[in-house]
Length: 140
Image (tube, rainbow, N blue to C red; front, side, top):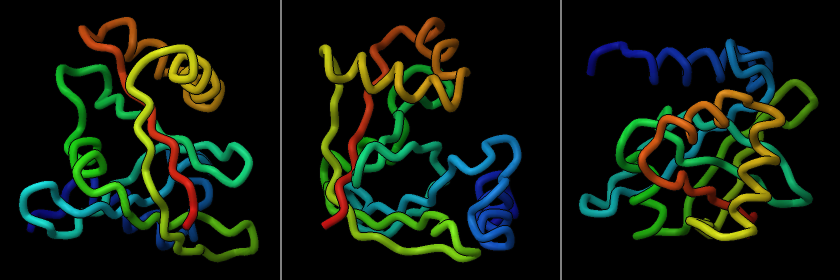
């Protein structure tokens, strides 16, 4: 496997214990979801924000057409794992259940909530020809 951007980001996340990851700062988690067809585990860095016990993520794909592959994987297999900074110099692994919020008032509220930590989400939605879905990850 080529050493690509995603792998560099994962390596940086581990080296820095999930904190201060350029350019996302402390708002990055590692999402490990099972492939919708293959069932294989795939790990992806994703911008997140805590809301109570839940973690909120956005299936933006930078505003490009179509949702990211991890979104389809979560729809098919909502049980997943995340790794997040624990705030004490380490990371913690959490089992989560994904609840997609593809449209509607709750999605709009959560999307605005996420643009507070990653303003680029507003630009992504403006250029997208789709409503970018949000996903709520609840620890199980």
